Image 1 (cartoon, rainbow, N blue to C red):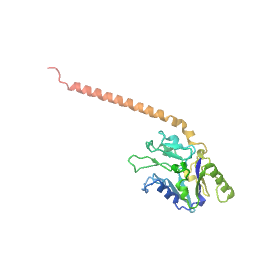
Image 2: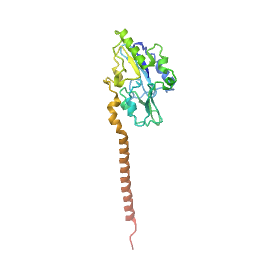
Image 3: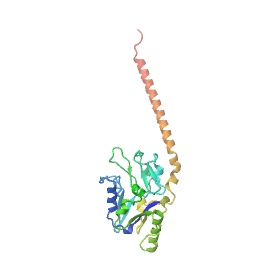
Length: 256
């Protein structure tokens, strides 16, 4: 399982990772929206640098959860967790329902409002690159080593090593190690990163475990709603036909 480790103490806010991501995927310049969140992410920005108090910077991107809420919420299988660690999407399957946006505790997936048939967009961990043994564009572009790529277990060891060797520099925590089952994007930091989850505690239990019962009922809900609508359509159509037949009978001339 591959992963990214971001050390916020090394980030200088240069945005080289942002530029590399946009270049790799030919993402268009962002159009400001009054309803957009202020974290820099959008359908055309899959990674961003969020300034924090004290001249600190935190890179934000899809966390590529071990048990992704977005995957469990998607009713058509447009999102998939790969063996390499990346959570990828298939726009050919996506129907734009935005269930993944509601399910993600990190608020990552974004809607592509500029397309006539809009879909969801987000970081895919440069899946095409890691499949052939390369690293994501963002980690390759980082000039300070603030974000690095490798095997998840090895990166966890490296994260804990840095914390143990510099306890005065880091908060004693690896973000992404255990939250909601863990993720393939990890953080160590000298500043609290709770803002990445909108200051909501997540716990360690994976989100799909909490929503499994509800999501299992989704196919039946679709079938039930479809049957209901078909029944309503038949009843309405039948009544309209009877009204037309009655009107036609009244308009026929009587016997002379």
